Length: 280
Image 1 (cartoon, rainbow, N blue to C red):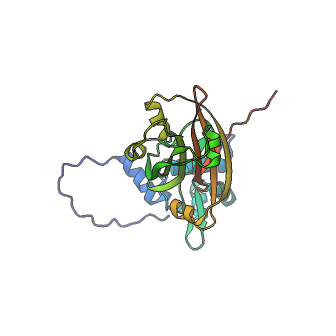
Image 2: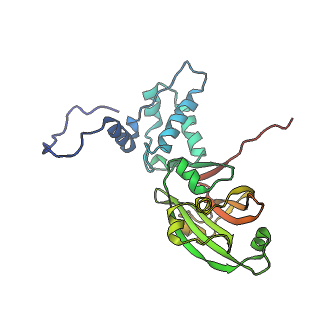
Image 3: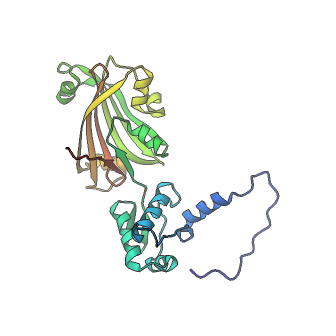
């Protein structure tokens, strides 16, 4: 990028009580507006491949919000020249983030930041708690909160008689104003009373803990399918978008089933993490 040789005339500012500018904050703000200003560097003495070093720095900038959704990365040739890398190396770094769903190549536009992607470990935790831990400040929209006859699958999972009533809670979980997941939970009616305001303020598992319910274990199934038209509307996805699905039956420390959950997640924004061990 060629530097401007003429500084624009800036109107003189009147004294105010506002705090002095924060150089760190301004650098992050400028990077979000202009990714060319993002501080990037590679260590040629490191055994870590150069493309991976670059990819990790770009990924970190997307995850912490320095590179905001909609930012353009600019020309691969310019980025390669700036870092002293070959164009194939830069292309490989960018492609790795395209494959993760964090960047998208748009014809006539360029390479654009989409969203950071949440990677959730497979453990007995709530989506709300996981998003909080990732610094994403989740919000919740309650779509339904009432009692209804339990479907056969739900009654079997919760150990209830056929047609016995359950509490049905349907919610939309959002981060930064963008929908992340559609959550449907079925609970025994005698477990706890849930007000809409409580469900909007925190996660379901946090409310259970507040009521003295100790969660112990769960049986969970993870799958995938295409979204219905209704789900596309709720999750702001295009027709035929891929969704991750999760069904979970959760038990308390006495072995009682206390929840049957059926959740769907945007595959473009969400992933499950597995840790695999070799059996001896």
